[in-house]
Image (cartoon, rainbow, N blue to C red; front, side, top):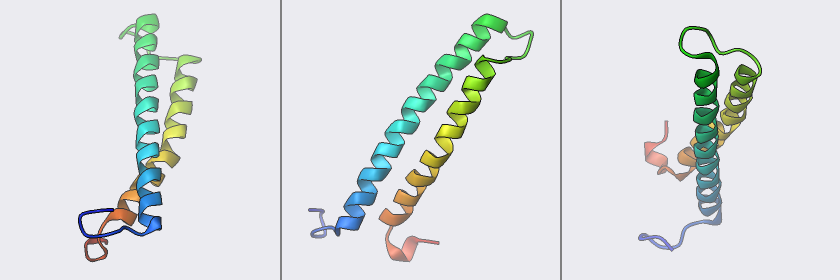
Length: 85
């Protein structure tokens, strides 16, 4: 129950889904930082990062895209109707 009364189940579901997608994005971001650090440790700053490290970074980026969409949809669903664009 919120400060303005009970919230509809759809808003609660969107809030929960947004929270889980934000957590997953955070974890993917941590994994991306770790892989990036490993790539820099292996190749240094003088040469570009190549496969297989680059492939892992690309997969992490592709995994984060749908999560970003879900999180922003949850934010949109949670926003008051008069503030949506």
